[in-house]
Length: 366
Image (cartoon, rainbow, N blue to C red):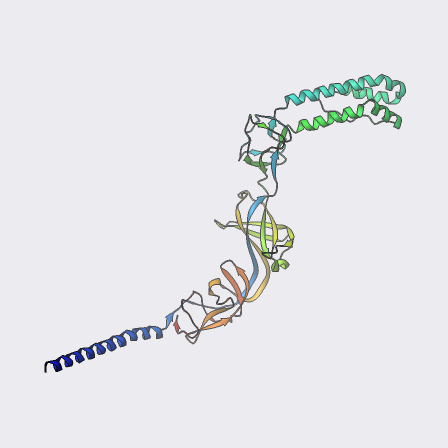
């Protein structure tokens, strides 16, 4: 009797356990099935195809069109000028930027001019005898000769014999020696070739500079260039002189530029071509990033959507009879996070926000 009771109680416990498990399983499945069958709420937009311009976008950094690196062609100590050679300082055209002490070389030049003057003076008596007609020209040249001024042009010989006479006396040799020294003296003073600003300064007053040493950098801040890398297949929209809209990346300020030149070589790795745009503006700075926008021909019957709405790059989800369907489209023009596509009919309900775990046939509400 005792064993029979134990068996009966055990069987009852097992039965109750199975019953509870079945009820729990049934109750657990029901909400899931209801959740699966419940329509998902989606965000849609009504498609209205229209006409949009074909747009090419590319980003690049500004470079000064006129930029020079300053190097010393002579050796000496830098001396003070009217304005310090420091980054950010402006200089006008022909204003002295840097000055190297040239006192020693100027003394050598004065000695060379004096020597040349003596050559002419010692040659004149013989010239009066052999070339009387030309001697008067040389006499005038000698009277106008100034040791502290640059040499003027020599009188032209009237005959081949006179030219050989002057050559034999070393007149031409001495003349060009002095002219060479005068040209070298000019290199002790660096003048601004245009209105601009110092962007790099590598020397200070009192510095001993050597020939070939870099001194700094000087740019024109009124005219810039920007290089844009454009896909080669868009080359038919690119032509010299075409206007380009350039937009700053921080505040969206717009500037207008023009294509100044196009590189005929296509990059082998990226299959892009370099387009150089010329632009001017007082607020622009070298090194600043800008987005270039080049407008092409008008594209008809297209719609602009977000890139992330594309499925496998050529389909989008639309709503038909309260269910999702995949609609084939043809991407025409990529614009940053957007893409212009063709293939969507008017009044189509387009899913305009990405829907997680979406699939064709899913029931939706909107």
